[in-house]
Image 1 (cartoon, rainbow, N blue to C red):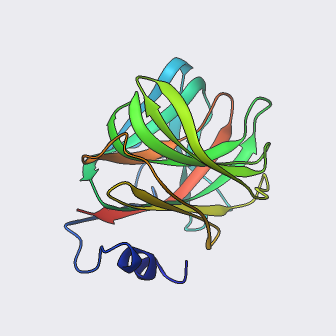
Image 2 (cartoon, helix red, strand yellow):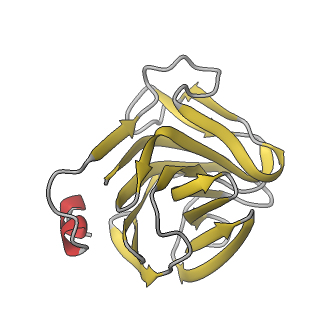
Length: 206
């Protein structure tokens, strides 16, 4: 990806976006769930989404941390509903015996129905899925080194049935799927016992 606008233009999404939103969590009080977000999960367990101070944050001083254990912890931006556009975040995996992952969600209908792209530090790969009725199905996967304890950038540009996934400024996936065609919420995702930090969340589209 040369630039964010370059990718959007290549997918026919030039011009002013009807919606643009961002969150660096710095104006929110540490220790609680972020206001304006739906902190939840897919499946069983208990997710724990909290705003925390973090010395290594790309934009100091706060990050959003997921430290609970659930099938898939999910945190959705309540105000953003996008059909075609982009979602991007910086993330760092901290720990996890079963999983160490960070992901972005788009076109979410609810916590059980959405698209997700995630990067996994235990498996060293990037994968795109559709999750339907709580069941996650991968439809494209690529091997990439995903270092734990290091900040990475994950982005998805989406238009119609086409999805472009960019990891650390490299386009790694260009694929299609038609599971969810309409607008939906965007957000963040982890898996199982993954303790993951998120910062500089951005989205836009129409």
